Length: 103
Image (cartoon, rainbow, N blue to C red; front, side, top):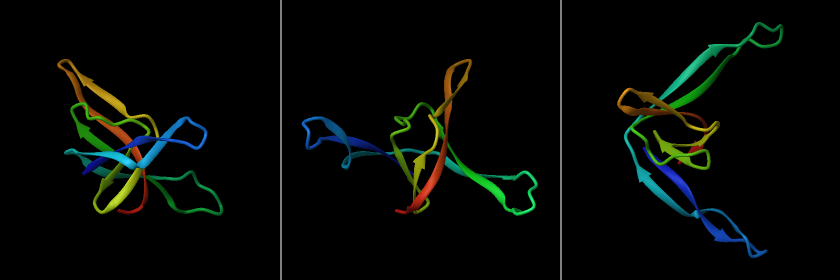
């Protein structure tokens, strides 16, 4: 899987803005798992609510600005990545993601 971190470019007003055309790509190991939880009972809905969690070993270069490409899809980060520590330091990072579509 690949972490895509946006680069920067000048905007028309002389400031800087994020740019996917100047993004850096970092290949990492990890796994993506879908979590499904039943929604609260409602007379109009019977679907399950689902989400995706990306689990990355160690302390990869990822933050809420990044996107992730995995399994032929691109995902955006929904919340700030959560670092999970062990007595030896960072064990892994958990990232809630949402699909954007095919890569």
